[in-house]
Length: 226
Image 1 (cartoon, rainbow, N blue to C red):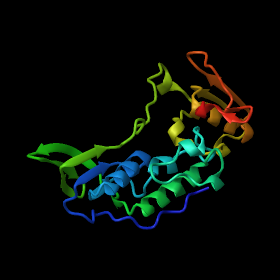
Image 2: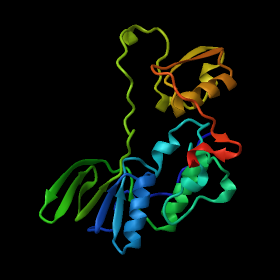
Image 3: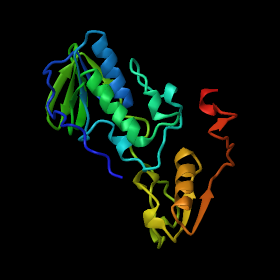
């Protein structure tokens, strides 16, 4: 399934000299911008992607939040109860769109920040669309923004397909094939199940440290809320 595109987002900041600049239009960046606006400060969010929440749009189709709905909303606007206990990727992206609209967040999309420098009592951001200035800068680019594949010995000579989890979308290309999933975190576990249910011939999991595996919920109570 392909997500429908957002309504057009301005590539140029509507406020030339805002009180604050936020780098990153994901959940953290949108929340920061909303709260800055609520405090009476003009704010512009700068993001290199064409749409808000791009990192969520790019995840595999089966993805659901690992935290329960009522612990996953952004400040000032809870996620709707109708979306269920475990919110899907598509529903979460749509929620981020509504959040940005609700707080009238100004987003300069397709704008890459190349450098940040202190300039007197303000900051100067060198971007692909020109310089931006503000006395406050919030960096909200995410913890796992850049995929990392370990340098395994012999990987260059591997004759099969080597794929990072960030590039996985669904099981269709792997039907009838043997797949080894390295890592048994949230992504590894969910992708392994998706592969099995999607028709892979065999799926194996490799992990360095034996994990402690808990169910998503116990006796109807979500473990993440414990």
